[in-house]
Image (cartoon, rainbow, N blue to C red; front, side, top):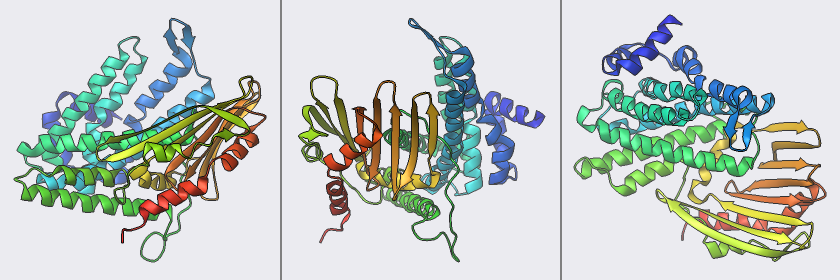
Length: 416
């Protein structure tokens, strides 16, 4: 433990002299996780648990505290995402190395990600500080970017004069990946809580993962990242060291699971999937929009249905467009959850290949039911009902799910 504390102190206080030491150390992926990542990355989730359950969040309305079970689930969720995220970030760092004159090395890339993230991990403890905790956490995150900049020339052998560009592109890809991942998690989970991150059973064949297995999807993702990284490298060589916007866009696309450029459905087209009536209720409101960022698009449409009295339903359709590959890739996490409380329950599970989320509260007679269609569309019905079965029936009978699948298939079909 003494060496761990010394390492944290040194990377935070004297990073310029500590990075060469880190780069020269023999290390393994498992060693980095067991001796450093598993311990230091737990600081933020632990602080979040203490803040949410014991201290609480105080506003002008009073102090709000989570129950212990909910707080623990959130902490475990954040911890698990952090462990997976640091590995995915290291893959990005490794894939980009040749583009900026560095040398690919998966262990050195994981070192870079883990030790650069130290400031953000330690800064997570600032959640316990009233009022200015968020500001301390933000400063710690910015300091992690600086640590990354200092470390890349040592661990990844990138020329010092190209470290700034290497850092910038790495951070951009990481932000976009996190943004889309959390957006998808929000669509899948609704307002609920994710549970176990156990991971699916994976069958390994003679020369790799079995076709269509979760491991094969992750393996293909890594190959796509490597290919996109080479494309960026070639583009940089042809443009005096500055890769083209198209090449960077392709790299971002590979990071978020894009297999090909797929536009989200136009607002008018996705709006057409909102029926005039739902479960016998007339439509009383409708909206649709499409947005683009970093070369890919997302779209959403929603409609309200009401009898003008006690029955109200809301239908939402979210199209992840070109980022649909990340939904397929997310299968490896095997996200499932089930919990109950007095008068209600919530669960997330898979049924016939689709991810399903349902929630019901009998005291308010309100709930929600959602499905992921074609690894692309998140379709949800929520509101007042007699039970989740009514919401499920409303979705199945009111929404043309086959039409959504056909729209996705039409865009995926090669031209010509």
